[in-house]
Length: 245
Ligand SMILES: Nc1ncnc2c1ncn2[C@@H]1O[C@H](COP(=O)(O)OP(=O)(O)OP(=O)(O)O)[C@@H](O)[C@H]1O
Ligand SMILES: [Mg+2]
Image (cartoon, rainbow, N blue to C red; front, side, top):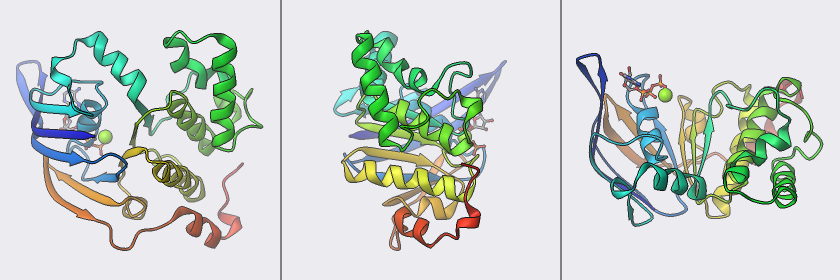
């Protein structure tokens, strides 16, 4: 599904080159759930942005489902991204003045889908993340966990093959974070490929595989032996740790 070889990325700061990735080789088979860990500044977000076709590498190759991404124009990349990839960020990135269902519809608007069809799909996506009763709330009328679930619904509404999530639980309390992981594990069971960046070792243990990056290089890559399952963790969690929702 994802195959990168010899991937490098240098940012230019004025005349100074900042090397962010120094030769990443990584293969992620279809349907795998991978966590990426590493210190701040090690290149995790840089890698995610390249995997998500939001940015291009300085050198190296990236094949996405057999397609050589470097051969694509910017417009073709935008199209590929819209059809193939769902993004989730630490800060949710929702439109502030816009209600949940309209936020979720956005990717479908870019696709030119008819209004009735896209509203129907947006409602279904919100129901799938347990927010069928919040569709007309705006972001400031929802808890952090709910906002992140809206962002997940927006990432899912276009039926992506890959979900890329950069610190999706970073701003959430432990229960809301665990609920996000429960959704990710359900998506994994449905065969979606997931790549998740996290600083939290317990969050990473929900994945099948953990890749560690340090200073722009992969320094370890292992399958998780004692996986955590969010449904089990949630069942054990005392209720007084519940989030404001
Ligand atoms: N747009 C940019 N211009 C210049 N340098 C950048 C840019 N984005 C990132 N960098 C640099 O590239 C390196 C990798 O940054 P990146 O954001 O990928 O780290 P990260 O692993 O995601 O860190 P964090 O855990 O703090 O989010 C850092 O040294 C950073 O300062
Ligand atoms: Mg980052």
